[in-house]
Amino acid sequence: MPSIDVCFSPELIHLFDLRGKAVVAVDILRASSTMVTAFAHGAATIIPVTQLEECLGLAKQGCLTAAERDGIKAEGFDFGNSPFSYMIPEVKGSTIAITTTNGTRAIRLSEAAEEIVIGSFLNLETVVNHLVELQLDVLVVCAGWKGMFNLEDSLYAGAVAEQLLERGFSSGSDATLGALHLYQNAKADLFQYLQASSHVQRMQRLEITKDIHFCLQHNLYDVLPVWQNDKLV
Ligand code: 3SL
Image 1 (spheres, protein in one colour):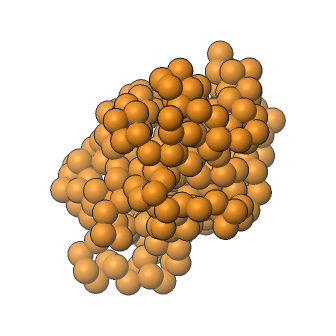
Image 2: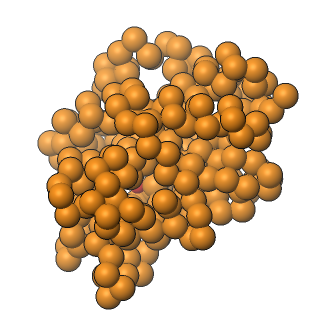
C-alpha cells in the first residue's frame, strides 16, 4: 500500500528520498494556486525559476514573465502573483516564466521525484484522483515561508492526507498525522482558522485579502499541472 508523507519546509527536503515518489508541490498563498488558475485560464506552459534575472531573460524567448518578492509584484514583469491577474485572454496558449519567494523554489527542489504535480485547494480533487491512479508513495512538499513552517500549506497537506488515507494509503509519518489533525480542526472555516497566521496577516497588510478567499476555495478547477522536461504543462 503506498504512503502519504509531508515535508513541512523546503529546508527539510534533504531528509527525503524523492526517487520513485510523487511529489505534490504546494504554496497555497499563492504560487501554486496562481499556477493552477493560469492553467485553468488556458496557459499552455509554466516555467518556474528561482531567480529574477533568469525569469526576465525568458521574455526574449517569447515568455510572459511573472515575479513576486515578499508578496509584491517585482518591477518590470508582466504579472505578479495574484491569481486574478491571470484571468485575461492573453494567458490563453501562453508560456509563463515565473519566480516567487518560496513556491518556485519548492518545485525546483523536488526535481528528483518520479512525478511532480502542482497542488492547491482549487484542484484538490483532481490531484487526489491522480495520486490514487498513480499508486506511488506521495510526498507533499510545502513551500513554507523562507524556510519556515506555514499553516496554509500544512493544512493543504492535511487535506490530501485525509483523502488518501480514506482511499487506502498509509500514513508515512507523524508529519502526516500532524497535518491531518490541523486540517480536521480547521476545515469548517479555513479563512477564520488562518486569521492569526503570518502570511495571511502579511497579505492583509498588503490589502490582498480577496486573494486569500479565492485560494481557499476547494475544487474550483480540474486542471492538473505536471512537471515535464523542466517545465509545467
Ligand atoms: O512565497 C511565494 O512563493 C508566494 O506565493 C508568496 S505571495 O503569496 O505571492 O506573497
